[in-house]
Image (cartoon, one colour):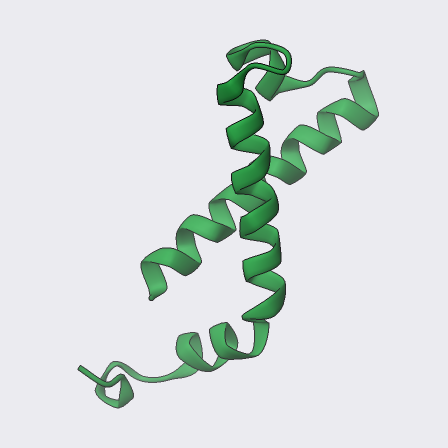
Amino acid sequence: MKNLDVLAAILVVVGAANWGLVGLLQFDLVASLLGDASMLSRSVYELVGIAGLFQAMQWKAIKRRWSMSPAMIPA
């Protein structure tokens, strides 16, 4: 489950960085790399949104998993 947590966190950071660039420089990095409104860029936006929702819904569970010692994690 930690791998999913890390992947979701990376996607949220990518989304935040992209929104920061849009807000500060009016530059959409995802659109410039993958094409404006292309299927691939839309997929990235969707994955970032899903990752953000996952992070929000799993916040308490993520904190609990990450604070457990390795011996406490069920196999």
